[in-house]
Image 1 (tube, rainbow, N blue to C red):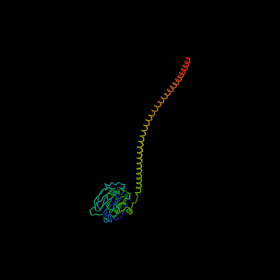
Image 2: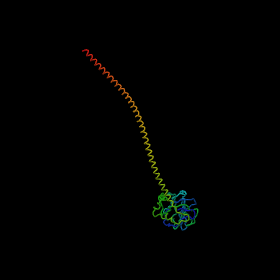
Image 3: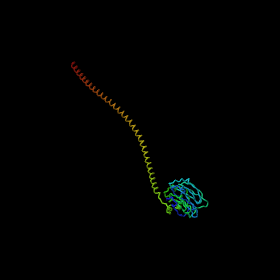
Image 4: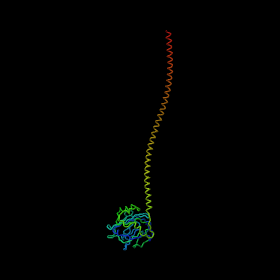
Amino acid sequence: MKFGTTVSDYVTFTPDMRPFTEAFSLCSWIRKLREGSNPSWFSYAASNGLDNELLLYDDGSLIILMNDNNGNVQSQAGVVVGDWHHFCICWDYTSRTANIYHNGRQTGSFTTNSGRKLTINGRVVLGQDQDTVGGNFDGTQAFGGELQKLNMYSKKLSSSEVRAMYSAGRCSDTVEKSHGQSRQLKWEDVLQQHRYGHVSIVDTCQSELALLAVKGQLVETNKELQKIRSQLNETKAKNYELSKALNRTTSDLEEKTSEVEKLETSLETSAGQLTKTETQLNATETQLKKTEIKLNETEAQLSQTEIQLNRGNI
């Protein structure tokens, strides 16, 4: 729900406040869009003249509860113009303590007067500070921002419940599904109330959900990228080890090649020597054959001579 910046821009209605007389929690997402003199997003004024039963400003501070100035916790909230922030005030009659939460973190607390309960039969105005019941607005206090998921519960929410509500996010359905029957003033009912001036209903969650979807896809893509990078690093490490092994193998092969070359050289030398030896052996065999032939011839001559000698003797 987006509000204009003039005294004519507001929403007003008269809810049944009886469930909240002894305990309540008022929570909403708020987007402050302008600076100003105490722009008010929620004002509850009672019909008996108590015009400030509950008054809340858009800087994350609580100004008045049960017509008593209960202090300012603005400095602890640190609200930034243009940003969405979550605000809760939680109170009960038994403890008389109101706790104030900003973005899931408690930023302050105070005690209400003894015996004081929230007055019923009052009027709620969103977007203005009502100085009299239902009117007497001040243009400098016009909200001019955006509200979303404004709900009021008939119990005092715990810090863990408030933190869970904030952590779930502005566009989740956690609020609608939790806290049972205690959610008495519902955002979906607030949206049906009459709007005055420039107050419009805008769907800011559709684009945000689309953005979240894109962010989710980006996260998944980054995960996949990290996985691929991890695989790439593993592959690089394996390649490095393989490269080292290849270098060792290449070095061993070079050594073996050198040894083979030496062996081949030695073999060639031995083969040359063997060829030379074979040549010499052939020459020797040839000479031996010649010698044998001469010897045979000599033996034949000798035999002939012996025959002749024998004949002479006869």
